[in-house]
Amino acid sequence: MLDGRYRLLDRLGAGGMSVIWRAHDEVLGRDVAVKLLSPELAADPQLLHRIRAEARSAARLRHPNIVEVYDYGESAGGDGPPVPYVVMEVVECRSLAQLLNAGRAAVPGHTVRLTHPGRPKPERNPAV
Image 1 (cartoon, rainbow, N blue to C red):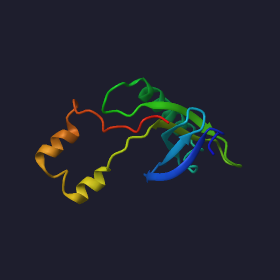
Image 2: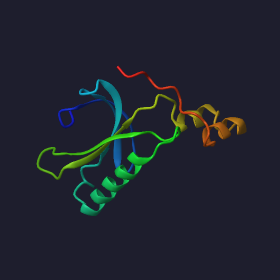
Image 3: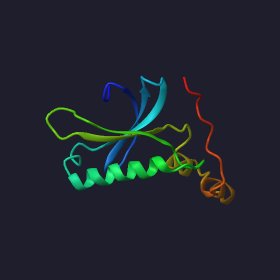
Image 4: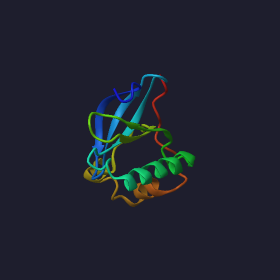
């Protein structure tokens, strides 16, 4: 349980700086995506400032092709520094890697649909 609110369910992906989890927001009763910064990087005050600023900026964006940011927090986990996290909407779809492996992203028409700014978001799961 993250900050007494977000129950981490499944690891969705990872990068060099963070891990993304599917989580359940126990307060609002809906599934969300939680991006947790690596604990090793959380000790860097400049990086913390940058992550916080990026979360604020992203939370102001409203566009069908951009996931919504719902929350930002810093979770105290043990003896180390607080670990920042960003809570976003979870979008049900296949990853770009899955599309590339299936050969679909290489089809020109499909590529245009993936990158065209007017393309609507994939269908979302209804809130519970």
